[in-house]
Amino acid sequence: MIVVTGATGNVGRPLTRALAEAGERVTAVSRHRAELPDGVRHHSADLAEPAGLTTALVGAKALFLLLSGDLHTPEARPADIIDLAASCGVRRVVLLSSQGVATRPLGPSRVAMRAVEDALRDSGMDWAVLRPEGFASNAFAWAESVRTRGTVAAPFGDVGVPVVDPADIAEVAAACLLDDQHTGGVYELTGPEVITPRQQAAAIAAALDSPVRFHELTRDEARAGMTRFVPIELADDTLDIISAPNPAELRISPDVERVVGRGPHSFHDWVARNVAAFR
Image 1 (cartoon, rainbow, N blue to C red):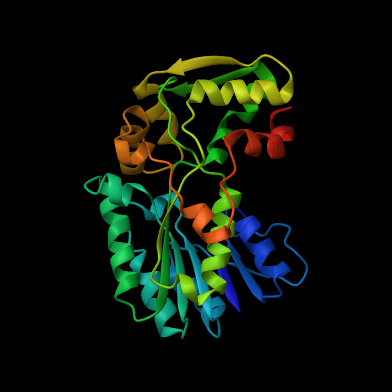
Image 2: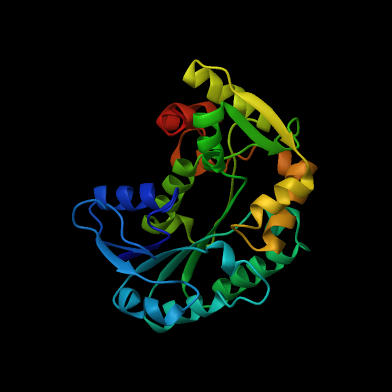
């Protein structure tokens, strides 16, 4: 049995499907039930209360751990999930971490995530760590404004980073869960090119064959919007990166290709698969 947390999200959904198609028994963990592949068992749990995972973890051989935004704050205790997994006999954990752990190690949310990585390394279980760049799927936040007003609103319109397709993260995660050769691996996951928010808006417009206007937000406006959904520490750390990425954050990583044998998908690829959300 493989347990997938965040199983109904942008990474967890394709990961759950890939594992099921590989013939694995899968328990999909999320706060709310959603449509799942045939044969996949659902388990409702809130990761802020790790004890709720016990039933899912007992008898599992592996865990994919994706931490929700509220577990990235300094006062949260996500390492308790690592301890619980070890006590339940889980043998392998693949952790979805953040590129910022290496590139911005002093950011409060990065310090917290580093502590989770360290707890995993010290757990005695096999492990792999995935450190993605920003997600292409963050563009879903623009879907409603594109549909209703033909507008994308974002800060730092001409500053880009190599955003990664969540489907690539899922494929790398599946490989790490299923193949011993990835034990102890730390993989930095990026897309194939640096792309700015203004260019992302243009890609959406091209896929729609319809104009999309770009409106640049101030940092304060973006921060106010982000903190409706994520802790302030995570919002500030993210804004620091996307406003002035350093050379390490602009680097195109070879790790997707190293693990899955092909190059990463572009933002244009992601839009083509998801264009219905913007119509």
